[in-house]
Length: 331
Ligand SMILES: [Zn+2]
Picture 1 (tube, protein in one colour):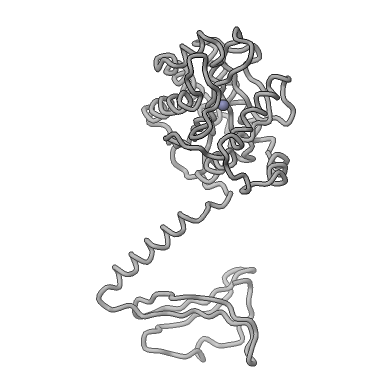
Picture 2 (picture 1 turned 60 degrees about the horizontal axis):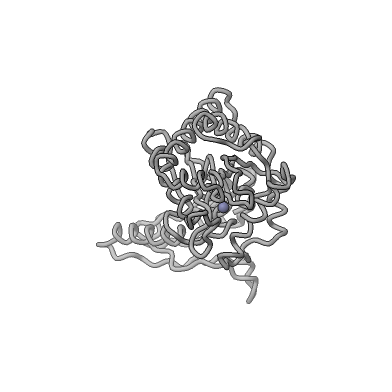
């Protein structure tokens, strides 16, 4: 409770055989507590606050049930388990929950379900390639023993863009990599590119791409009511410069590694307002693996061995990112 002046004395409080003691006190300048110690296991049946009535002031009511003596521990365990399950089902609050263990990489295979994403010259769907790539990356990252990895989807399902972001944030991700493949009207264009968030797109093409990727939710018929434009705008405003710096720092690492193994677009690191990159506190990049509108590149992207090259280069970049971040205490 907030700091409280108790008008009752501990010794004047009622005694019951199962209630050992009641202690009152201020713990800190702004916190007070009431501690009830029982001789037996109890269960909180319900607790609520009653507004002033019938001559009483505000009341906090806690209804307790005594546990059967024999199954106390079992009951406590069951109760605790039920609560933690219920806890998990509730939507995770948007706070960073950063465990001290290995860094968590969240991989986000673009599109899925009703939304195929771009469709390749041979008819291959972007959503299948992005999922295949994410799984390869996950396996490689895990095999280093240095990272934890989560996928926003590991099946062919539609997920709203804000939900992908929220997933990364509530999981406490240290890095977020969204995986895509592009398609444009110029069939000769090919090459990989890496995007980080910017309200100002680096060029018209980048702007158009972000626009079409951001349409994923509309295509999949997903409910966007979870996030209004206003909230999205606030999130952009809140996007900390620090997080953007980290995202760019990581994007540069990927570019450096990937340039050595596959063809990239000129100005490989690009900027655009992708909805999925708007977490204010999770460094995020979006990888456009290549163009499904280019016959040759589409064929390459369908080959697991080609994707393996991309995945390996990405893992090297992740290694370099965390190594330098650690060295520079860039946190
Ligand atoms: Zn896409």
